[in-house]
Length: 283
Length: 216
Image (cartoon, rainbow over all chains, first blue to last red; front, side, top):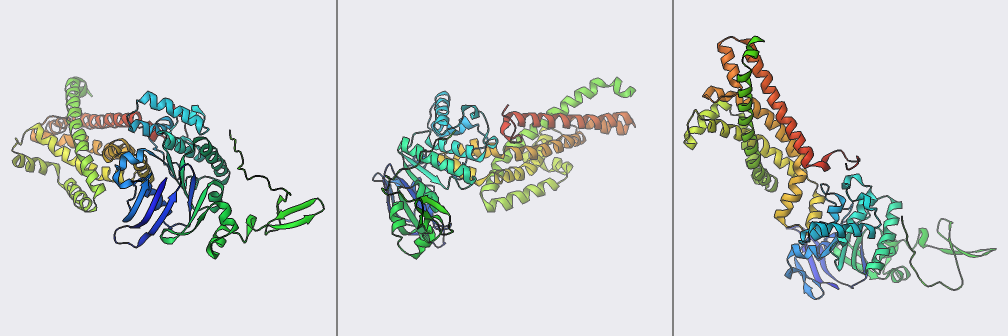
């Protein structure tokens, strides 16, 4: 469990970028911080592994303040996935994945063997192991980034807009992979995005942020869609438009759901099926 | 052409001597420029002071340096050390800026990501920042190396033998072939060092080759 208590942050003499932020992030769940750029979501994420220290307030992991931990050791114990992978361009894929075990003193051979297993885990062919990051596609780089974050088997996985720089088709693949991995590995995932659809897709808990890291609403995706806290949330998540503003249309073959543009989005079935996430299986 | 054939031994010996006199300042200058370049990269105030003085240093004529250095360091005017120190200073003058620019050129996201996965500061500098700055440092070093090879010739004016001997001797004795062979050999030594640097760069930085190609 990660707990923020009354956390504030200002950089230098600047304005408060985070103002009195408190949040409990439950273990073994995916919490998505979502908001427009400048809302402080990345700053909050970086407080967990001490890339940023709060000006006041505390951040605790399982009851221990992160400020009591050595920052370098703390970071090695937490997986971190950055936008566009954040891979080290001068290391081969296998060595990128092996980075954290190597930093922790694992022998090169063991770290590489583990790295190859992780390539399997994230659905990458082992033949890519000896490539350099620049020789991979954006989606492949991102998978390597995830493999690297998992290499030391951390309990916590921080993901900072990891799929922001890949095209929509690859992004959809990677999102499904993330869901699959989370189901298999059961990590505490903290995910930052500005894409509300991504948030609803991945999250157990969605936290919608405004400027200053102010929480506008938090809850499960269903709770938020069913009962947006205010007009800002309603408009941000788009309940009044697109595929979320559905109307029932009677057709000769049964009732269907139609979006605000008049396109049919689905069929209304009598007994609502148990909510279940799609099974992404990818090459 | 006769002069050249009659003096192949001399030309060979002077070329080797020239090579030796060139390599020390190139390596020493690079090693000293790395911490200086890091300071300039890291601290804005240091950058202005360091890089301006480095730039000014390069404008001092080499002959003048040969006169200034000995009294300051208490060494002989007519010594090889005098030449080596002066040329090292010129390499530092070029490389301090080059190293600073090279470190500036390292992608901030990559640096952040190294911090995020748990590199300590020192290890990050030597295993992430410095290697990634490598290609830019190397291109600076190639310029510094060529400059050094040509400046070594000036050492002959204080009696330090190099291919420069062929210039002064050939000029005094009006042997055009001798002067010309000196020019050609200086160019060859410079070319040799440049090729060696490029080859070392390829070996040490295989990742820096154009992306998209197969790994091997």
